Length: 336
Image (cartoon, helix red, strand yellow):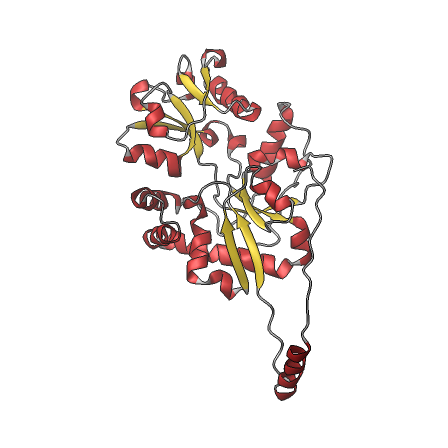
């Protein structure tokens, strides 16, 4: 992430015969403007494909990217993550999370990455547990086993909601454990897990588990940050503003199609990514389609007040260096 970022340039080779043919055609049809060349764009996901990404796959299937003169390739992230790939210029766009961005925004070396659209309007993550364990509020985590990623921001947020509910955070059993099968973990030694409901929460429901879900945003308003977001390489944006706007226009059409047609959108995602569980995708899509825009009129819009509030909370709690207001995002490339 802290590597020198250099843009690569493509060589343009002009064949004499093609040039002559082009001149001849131009002479025959002087009113016809030259066609813009198709732009190749790489979009790197944050994780394996899921319903956070449905709009991208709809845009591919329906030809919305092609309508904008774009040839888009969707790839999964390398080990060092989507942001590093976007920063290096190997991908023009990617998917990340606002809570993961402070290190790149406070880096001594400029990292050419900015958030350009919100995929979901609200933070849909929270703590899931079996209803039988009685964790119906954050205080209920006292004496329970919570699977932690052992990250400072994660633990600080957990401490915040527990104490806001009158609980004693020191009584929460933090178990360092990476959970990739939430239903199985909840039926073994783990009582509570931080999850995104649209995928892991629905997965638990389909496994027949009766669960409680505590959303962070419902406890502390500053935790209603943007998660996930579309990020872009800022050098690319400066040189290719038309293509960038076209990319987000196609994304908007894809996500708005999914809002209006969740069942068909789920079918498209499963067609494009056949290894996915069709039943999980279908129910997840039905739930998450209402989250893409929620109450806002403009898909992708990032509210500066909410964006700034989360970073201010991190700074006030010594979790990051100060991040100036309105840093790290732009709404300038969104379609109106």
